[in-house]
Every structure is written in C-alpha cells, then in structure tokens.
Image 1 (cartoon, rainbow, N blue to C red):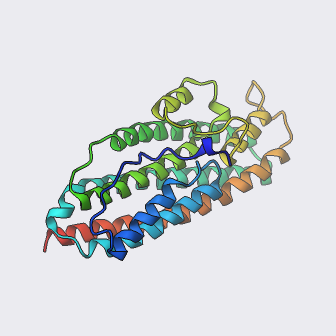
Image 2: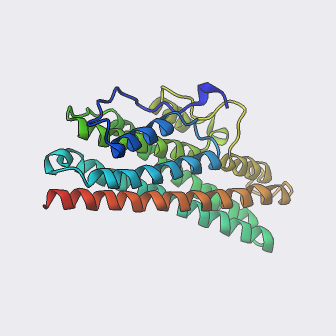
Length: 268
C-alpha cells in the first residue's frame, strides 16, 4: 500500500524512562510498530491494528506494576475516556451487525425487502451521526497537551496511539463512496486534515454494501435491481464486523485491566 496511506499518528519525541528496562523497551517497540502501520482501509488491516493494541496493553499492564501514585495520577482520566470511546464503537458495531443480519434474513425470505433496505439506510444515517460526534471528540483528545513527566509521556503515547487506531476504525465504519458528495463527509475530512481517510479508488466492505443497496433501490424506494448483487457484500460485511468485534473486545478488556491497575496504584 502506498506510503501516503499511512496513519498520521501524532508522534512526538519521547524521553522514555530507564531505557534499559526491558518492559519500557517492549512498550516503545510496540508503539513504533503501531505508528508505522498503514492506514486501515479494510477490516483485515484494522483487525491487525487491534491485535497490536491488545499486545500493547498486555505490556502496559506489566509496565504499570513498576509505577507509583505520582506517575499515574495524570493519566487516570485518559483511561476512562478510552473506555468510553471503545464502548461507543462496540455499540456501533453491534448495531451495524444486527442491521446487516436483518437485511440478509429479509433477502433470503424475499419478504418486505424494500422496507428492510430503507431501515438499514436509516440506521446507517444514525450511526454516521454517532461516528461524526465521536471523531470530533477524538480530535480534541489527540490535541491535548502532554505532561513533562517521562513515565506519563509513555502512557500518553499509548493513549494517543489507541485513539489513532480507534479513529481509523470509525472512519472505516463511516464509509466514503456513498457519502462522498455530502456535507457530512466533508466534516469528517476537516476533522482529519493530516491524512487521507480513504484512498481514491479504494472501496471497503461498508462502502460496497452502501453501493449495492443504492443500486438495488429505485428513486421511489422500490426494488429495481437484482437482490443477489447485495448478498455477497452483506455476507462479507457481517464477517468483517464479527472480526472487528472480537478484536475490539480484546482491547476493551485490556483497557479495563489498565484502569484497574491505575486505580490500585493510586489506592496503595
């Protein structure tokens, strides 16, 4: 994939504490791998990034065992924020999967298909509103100032890198082709001015479904195309969402463990 597609992680020069410490070096190496990962425009590349986050948080868990109250107090709010964002994305994935499954069932039954397609499209509009709001919030979170304490810097970099992966996932779920002429997509582009969210000419699984359904429904909201053309992209999207859900669930558990560890350190 072209180098222009790489995620624009908000990299800063990090002064890692006790660089000879193997735990610190492990966290640093995993951060570097995630920063250099390519822009996720497919479910497989996003799943790869989520797996990288899972490994990162396992290392962070070990890293935190060596820290004290002074070091972690400044990142406690960030841990809660990441859990909130992750929870929002989980809800979006769950809603999208349910809509895809309902639409597939309707196609198999060939019953009330036009109404089911319209319900899917209505749900997509609601989901994109949630994603736009979440993307706007991520931008503010990524631009916040970082503390000078070296250990806090490490944890801040973990936070920023996590936000960048979440941003790629949200952009994937938003889609592009079906909304490319809308003001809503222009808003998302402005929220992420430093990178191209989706490369011109590329189409991910979400967009393929949007395109297939747009071709299926006529201007009077009636079925005018071959329903079989929508079956394959719907099946692919369902499998993609399932993979993303599994990867995100692992990250969510890692975020919970990290927050518990932070609270335990503060309560020592």
